[in-house]
Length: 168
Image 1 (cartoon, rainbow, N blue to C red):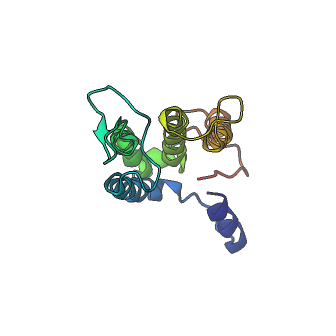
Image 2: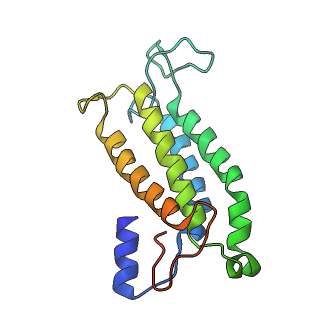
């Protein structure tokens, strides 16, 4: 996101592009997680040992949380929940009435970062920062940023004051 915003600034692009990328991101991430799941233990994206019915043996005889499958489920759920905002983002009347372009992307990022923060607790990675890992710290920073964006403009999508720009 930082790279996209920098390139947009350098190119002089003022309008929001985030809403256009939500569904392509979801598709790409789902395909990536399918690959992670099929890779097994090699890429370290699985969860810790579990006795849940969802447990999967990745070849080492230990039933583990299939964190990759949980992520696929959440991404598809987010895609469904965000569909009303997608329709608004494509409706000129909704935009004229106050829908802020980029709002869908902001909600997507907020939902995804919240999920990633939680799922990291069941991954077998070190959590050296007060019980958190580096991904969780990045998620907290992202959640603060997107909460600020959503609260600054109103979560429902009200317009920014004149001259203010939308990130996303």
